Image (cartoon, rainbow, N blue to C red; front, side, top):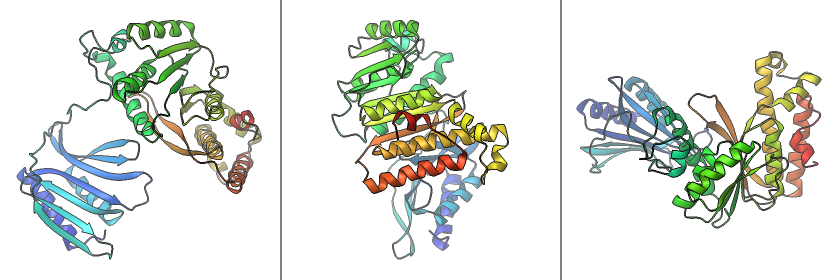
Length: 395
């Protein structure tokens, strides 16, 4: 949307409503820009450390991202967004609503309508968020030391509780893409203490009301015993934990396969199991990309990024991207629509990449040949003799 006199009027009205205390919110929509998966931006007023700000909620297909800006920064961003990608903006106030829109013929119009009837919302930065997993005296949350017996989240478990809900929010969006009735059996590979496994079972059964069997696969027997005890106390009849490795687990009838932070080639083992099971959904958060890094270090290919990869930290990051990029290509080869996006696993740990495969239609022979050629070219470019997942699938 080009910056016009109408745009300037819209911005002036926004500032005036902010000053007058009549501001409710702003919405930017009909996005036609280049940022992948961005759908909408919503803005509301917040007060942080006694300073007025606008909280921008960036709505993507599978997640929301919130960033806070002071009014001057927010105005600059809104103006830029209207000039680059968003075709409609709506200012909601207690007096009236203003709609700024770029029509199909390129003309920009500004319309006024009656106020939507909404009161000025609270500016508290700490508004209570609606959680998919509610802390309301659930036995598993108490047993795992997330809440007390009354359902109050312990202070030292707040981060873990938020992590659990963040994880379920991501999975809920992905599960909704699947055909109805297909989520019959879930395997959580490397389930650990089971925080996320229990939460997923709770969501599938208590929120979606599915009769889904959920299995946690964990190598440490003490963790398996603990989690089975908690499952029994929670009366989760279709949840069980088994001892074993990802490599050895038989996942032939799994519809949804998850592996968060499986180290190095264990992530490949998990993807391999999911592909062989023809799972509807495969979700992995890879960790420790050692196999490809060793290949790149051994062969030291000369290419356009050699000036970066001569430094250890950049080589490590490049190896991560190459490893997961080839994983995504392999998933595509086997008919999965692939997504790669950021997953913040914990407030005190680095951001991670989530690689997602949603089962789609089988590729044509021509397209499969193109994907194989891309994998081959990528390996040659970075000096990679083999990728573990490629070897498992005998490509």
